[in-house]
Length: 63
Image 1 (cartoon, one colour):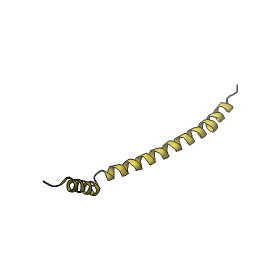
Image 2 (image 1 turned 180 degrees about the horizontal axis):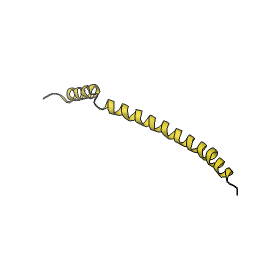
Image 3 (image 1 turned 120 degrees about the vertical axis):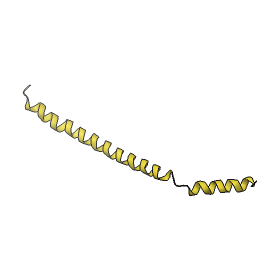
Image 4 (image 1 turned 90 degrees about the vertical axis):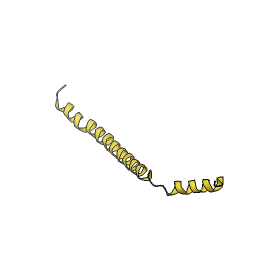
């Protein structure tokens, strides 16, 4: 049986070499960045649409 320090070192080295979860984390970061960009565009376009287009429609009808 190996000493505890050797088993710990082997375990840490194996953990550092393992790259299986790295791709999933990268895709998650990419997807969250895209989601933030889409959300900011939707908020900006929605505000402009509400302030400009709908106001013009309301102004076109007599009160």
